[in-house]
Image 1 (tube, helix red, strand yellow):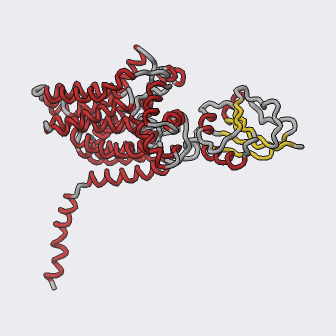
Image 2 (cartoon, helix red, strand yellow; image 1 turned 90 degrees about the vertical axis):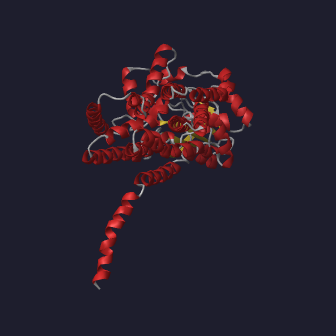
Image 3 (cartoon, one colour; image 1 turned 135 degrees about the vertical axis):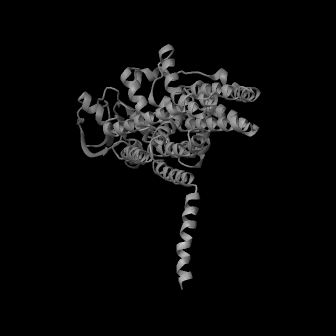
Length: 493
């Protein structure tokens, strides 16, 4: 009896040892990735918004060659890789939904890549923290389902960096090959990748200075892959950035602050809130002090330490903000938070390294606080107030009630209400665009519908029209990043 009673007690150390040996960080990252995928998937069917409409017109109704030709010669200011992927995924169903599939898959896949990159550069725990930051970041959540190249860009930059670090350490040809392909893919996705790729190239030459043939061959292979597109590089609509968001000190500071905890279409006071941002900055500064103290104790550093993976991650986090800012000053103003996104994975790892440098109690508090701030911001970003405006629902409503002879009148808007709704009609409509917000003349149809941006109506003092001979019979309000109203009219006689 005493022997049997002792057996469970004897197993306890073995059980504890087994639990201690479990790969907790990879398990946590896997759970985070699954949760992030589910959250992003829930946003996949939101209406098209903003530049997504441009991507829709670049992809839908064209052959593969037509897509590439349109990107090369049209208003699009990005290379073709994302649009080719979106062209393929659009064939799975409703293209207004499925053109987002590349962003969903690659945006989610960036999370484990960030962990692997962090594990090999800043450490396992900072890598897991960085992956968690990407998974919960409101900024990454938005672009993780947007039908634009940014999620693909972040994935390619993270993958190419990870492959480069592995190649430099193992000297294996397969890693050099993956690095070259991923680097070329990043260049084919967005032109701001050049700043990340430049830092990667410089680091590879220094880290492999005793065997330059490998990094030079990989760089040559990547350049050969990209060479067919070099004559097509253009920026037809780059001037729009300066018009939408001028490069001011205020905008530069705000956009850098938005890159992880913020949201593209919300003030920092709303997402993550000033208190949330202050919490993140405070823990990052404490981590910087702790990391500085550790470095001071380890001084002087050996040459390999000076070019370690930690330095690479810091340089990559700075590469795009500094590069875009210099380009905007010296050439064309392209400043904007989304154009910094190539450095977001490295930025998350820098934050992870700073929090990971804290003593254990402070580290636990820092991780919990930062993830709580980001989770709050992510939850708010998917609320009706900040989600993409439901133009699909409005288009479906008009498809259902507006006969072909009934005019659909659309007043001007701040954020492209007209193009968003037009892209999501499934039936033909008699659309009348009224830039001066007036009721069109010579309308004799039995019914008519008016779409009006609430913000424009408020700012410009545009009243609800009461045209002669018509009665207002219905009013539908739609809420989101842009609030708008659909009004229905019937002829009196």
